[in-house]
Length: 332
Image 1 (cartoon, rainbow, N blue to C red):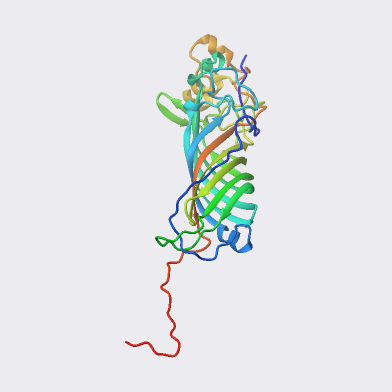
Image 2 (image 1 turned 180 degrees about the vertical axis):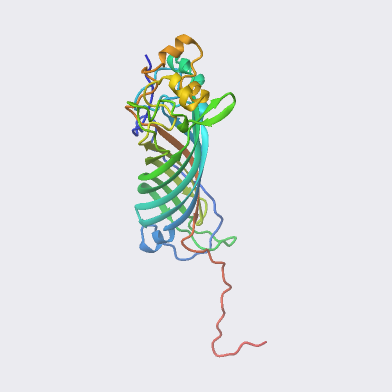
């Protein structure tokens, strides 16, 4: 009766194309000086350390909401754009080899889902909703697929031309980390934390244990970026986060006895366990009936813009040449 998407495995097929970025950036005219190719030891070491800001939309793949169709397992076709939220993060990136880097990232964002936003009959009848703040810390390993990088000349003087800076990269990455989440449901206009309300009878005999508000995550994705100057770079990244919980939306297994929930946890718990609008619909999700799909874990996605600042070295100001006189002293 109810088939629900819980996308917990990375499927990038037919979603991403290999993007070729042609950067045509005029950085002015440069004085003739010695340049080095990126592949030299001297040059790649000038890009070793960066501070990065990540910002962009967030999508949720779980039981609640979704497109106007029956959910498809292991597919992003059920991504509900109407439930898009946002995230922001900060990271430190260390490039330890020309083709490899590692990043330490902290981010905060939110995810949400609402059965009212889908016209698929069973999920719409279930009438569940949630939203949650997510706080993530993770370490990722990056590998370059393509790069075209070189340093141009150091100083910019009018009338003299030199080689331009290049910094074009396409890379893939994966890693590991943890995410904190706290799902809340809408009860009479108020957003109440769902975990303490035990909406699926957690802790009752024969029922699942209370779930933890943290989960291990595996981020995987692809990114591209290009340099504006030696010090600043911009780009885009698509990241899929596989989690190891099915409770980011507080929905996983079967319905529970609302009378027991009313007695022990109050009317809020009883309502948010089964808020279906009619008696017929309530029977669909009653005690022992399918409420979620515990076979598959929840997932979420980031589609971020990135702004990177090179902190490996400092750009010096041009110095005035020192004149040396042979055979005579300077007069003052």
